[in-house]
Length: 260
Image 1 (cartoon, rainbow, N blue to C red):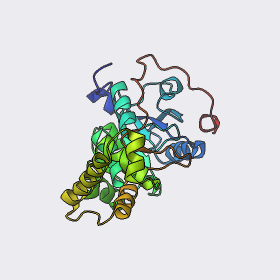
Image 2 (image 1 turned 90 degrees about the vertical axis):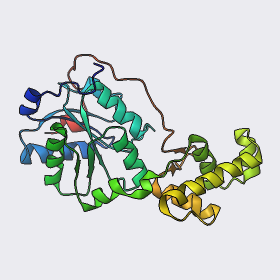
Image 3 (image 1 turned 135 degrees about the vertical axis):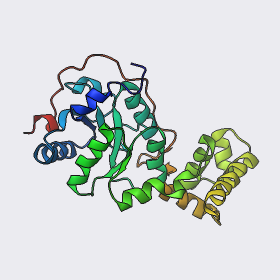
Image 4 (image 1 turned 120 degrees about the horizontal axis):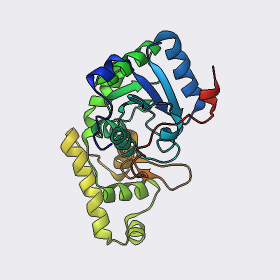
């Protein structure tokens, strides 16, 4: 199923959306299903999972739309998740509390059709699903629109720059970073300088200090330090292979699926 359009034909759109969701909070999945059962009965719920890897074996039919939480606890990268889902067939709508523009833009540029914030009114969720089923871009609110189009999300940093920024955020000095990354100290300083220049080129003014550089990188979503001390840049998360192109089976049991 190499065609990213998957099952999406004119006739398919006429049947109404077949919805699946990926979120590692069962109460969220239950809330989505309950909300749509009452307000949008034409949307057919076909299953849910806590990770993208699990989804193909947890649906009763190939979904036409997948609601994807941006940050999952398995450490997977949002852009990689969107690409894998699109390769499988469904269209993707981001569904999250995430407000950092870099993280959101990565999902959009990978092929997601838009963003629904979890704090937005329920009616907008159904509108977003219908729009995605029709292949139309959608943002659920003024705030969501601002996040998707925030110019800060256009700053591009290389993987090496992100590695240096993460270590700076953890308090390492350039000599220690150089030893950890097997680089010269001058090269580490060059990556730091290029990061500052990337912010300045996009936003007009660059960070005035290393502390400000680290702060802006974290607030915008370039780096994300997890509690274990092994954080990775938002562009360097775990990326898995393509989803299996097999017939959908019965979904496994979960709190969300077992709920009424």
